[in-house]
Amino acid sequence: MKNRLKDRIALVTGASSGIGEATALALAEQGAKVAIAARRKDRLEQLAHTLAGLGAEPLVLVADLASEVEAQRIVKETEAHYGHLDILVNNAGVMYLEPVAEADLGRWRRMLELNVLSLIASTQAALHGMRARRDGHIVNISSVAGRVANPNSGAYAATKFGVVAFSESLRREVYKDNIRVSVIEPGLVDTELRDHIGHEGVRTALNGVASGMRQLQSEDIAEAILFCVTRPDYVCINEVLMRPTDQE
Ligand code: NDP
Image (cartoon, rainbow, N blue to C red; front, side, top):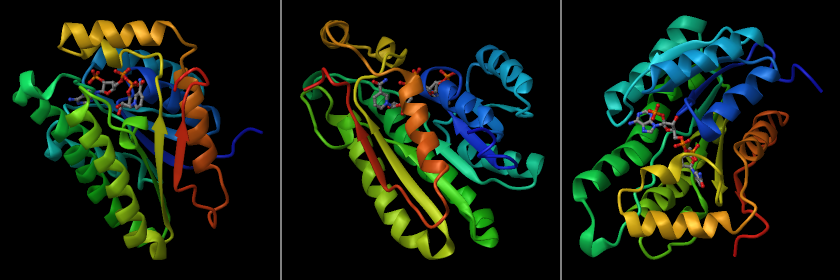
């Protein structure tokens, strides 16, 4: 079925690669107009070219979302450009895994700011317009690490448990305004995320685990997000937890 999101306006953060890129494409293929945000302008422009070919009238928003001011700006710019915002996909994130005893706290601070505070800030900015229109859907990307805390993932798990908790609290604040909140909790997905782990031992070990299994693909997550945002508006998918079949 095509055009299930015709005339819907979406903003996807972290759209320059991986899950965000696949999600922007999936939304566009269903007729949504899509704003895309991240730091890498060249990657966003490449994606925008493809989105334009699908008729998605893309808006490129170059932003470092570790700043909550930037997280709010991209929402306001999306609303100013298209008139309003229907679907906010809070996907931008990093995964800095390292043992607590050796952790670089500056790196962990940036992760906490991006994965949690920025997601809260963009959500806050979107609520005003969604409430006024009594229509909106916020999709937050958490992780299996938002359900299970493994060694070396203390701060990352704290951010993703935080996203789950925030999403549920938010849902209960806004459901009466006809605003839906969904949280997605993927297991291992084959993306660039692991490349940025600063601790070499942890990075090598996790890459070893990943290479021994059939990983999820970004398109699998995009499809789950698409399922959430194409339900009739009396249906709110609260949570989607998905692992590769091969993941314990
Ligand atoms: P990628 O590394 O491919 O994508 C991360 C995205 O976030 C990129 O577009 C990156 O863009 C953006 N980003 C990172 N830092 C910033 C920043 N400071 N400001 C703006 N954008 C930023 O990984 P994934 O697609 O895997 O990750 C997407 C989400 O999925 C994350 O929240 C991650 O935690 C979650 N997730 C991933 C899993 C996996 O196994 N891959 C499993 C479970 C959850 P740029 O660098 O251009 O700024």
